[in-house]
Image (cartoon, helix red, strand yellow):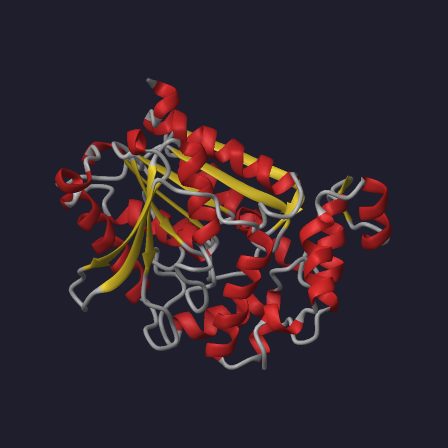
Length: 354
């Protein structure tokens, strides 16, 4: 099975790249009849991209061997993320953990932004995804949030099932605190962020350190996070198939990640934690057409009920993984920019604050 970038012809890759710049009338023509949910119609550029993606042979990666699925996700991210945003500095780092070292990648868009740091955990259901699949999102975050970014290459299932990933996330945060003197950031101004499974890890990390007698995250930025693997919320039924992330893929992720572990463990399903008081301020962004929509919103509401300062934003017309699609059209870019503004406000970051 070839990688996605090899499956597509040069013409098809050009069509996807140019799709977001096309007039809305052309996007509607490509996308055909657009889905509607809660009286809201999906973005025309998103509908057109979905139609093209769904036509690609072999695009259902859960039917592939794990190594081929990982290669496909990396290729998709490169395709939809657009041209890499230039950085002042990019540094590959080694992150020590009790189970051995893992990889990380540090991004600094402007030398004056190094005094704030965001740990970023990529999506991919704890099975696929990598530093490479998160590259365009981390560059975007570094450029527009006014903070440096540390992308964390946590261990993946099925080779390393739960709790390897949340254990690595915790070790990576402690490593980032220890690096403050070397990298020049304030250890009290470290935020955590992630999308999908990575949003789950960011949320779990904040719970792990909620009452700890050590440095804790200053802010949490959660994009369409997985918060409850113990049940399927109503959005699973509404958006089961055809909207990029499918119910079948989530089942595949869950099987690989959990093995025989208990899905009600709060380190798996942070929504089920008994006490959410004392968590860092949060910004939770979900997509209107997404199987994970309802559990993300439920977690935001649960934190708010516990007294946590929370901003909840539903991007009604978007689908899952918009942070990886900023190279196609404007809607994903605008949604990500909004989140960058929330992060900037949350930790007082970057050159614009000077």
